Amino acid sequence: MIINALLLIIVGALFIIDENLALSVGFIIAGVFLLISGLVPMIQTKSVDVMGVIMVVLGILLIVIPNVFADITFIVIGIITIIVGALYFVGAFKQSGSSKIVGIIVGLLILIAGIMILTRMDLAFVLFGIFLIIAGGLNIVGAMKKN
Image (cartoon, rainbow, N blue to C red; front, side):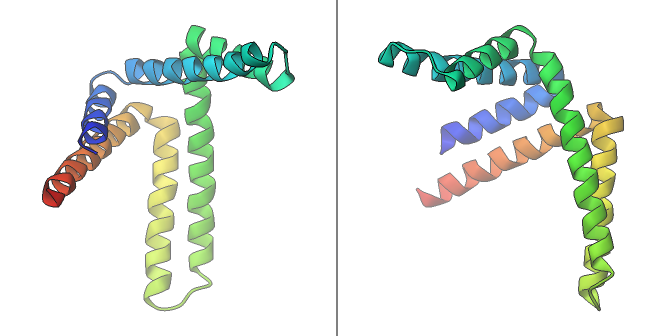
């Protein structure tokens, strides 16, 4: 629990300090996992399968060109976030009372977050880093309370 919390804090700090390094390291780690996950079963069974080959190729691509995947990932996340925010916003008008107000506010905040991801990725990274550091700190506090 403490180790996970410390990792959250470290990754959060990395996103604040250098988001490109944080993303590259993350995608390289994912690439290594994909490479191993694709190779090991094929080596064990001494056979080649389509899924294994796809995992190996994706793993190699993630290791060699992690920044391309980072850009694509955040564009997709930004678009999805905008769609979710719009759906919350529109759906709020079907509610009544305080649920309507909360729905409108939440929808607008999610919509703004999506736009920010697409237009101000640097700020989104800093906010994400701050979120990870806070989450790590809260996990440490929770772990200490258990002891």
